[in-house]
Length: 201
Image (cartoon, rainbow, N blue to C red; front, side, top):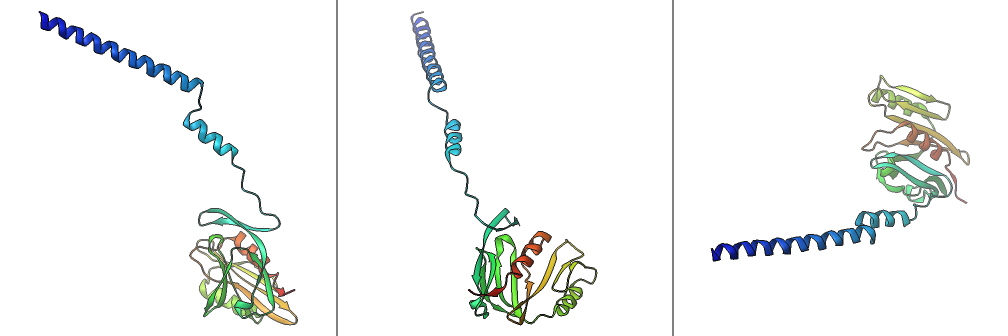
């Protein structure tokens, strides 16, 4: 009997201790709700206080790239390293000149799928023949005296070539293949970039 009574007392004592702890916990939880902000509230507040990224001033190259929408301010790039001394072109600020390849030097910004080469000479017929050889079923979506944009029959990828005359000398600007297909908006923006080729200064 005595042992049974002691056991009963112990159970009651534990129940009381547990009840007290729960009460304290509830009170603490209520205090947290009424007073200090929750962790989620702190995160939301911090995000709210962060300033939005500043929009670049002036014209930009903007497109859907490999990682979603990307943009880069358009700036003048010296083409001396492309063996085009004294010439500049307006292109994405993030574009870099790559070493010479069989197709010539390249000006590339991979994230925005901007990739062109520039060479002396202004014969678009050569480019048109090449485009048709690559894809006989493709079609021209723009065909002017100084610009051609060719849409391939599979996947809707676009190729372009544009001629520009600087100080009486003709140059041809054209796309260089990348890991991604060239979309129409990218081709249009690259044409506009090509048309800015001019003397430095």
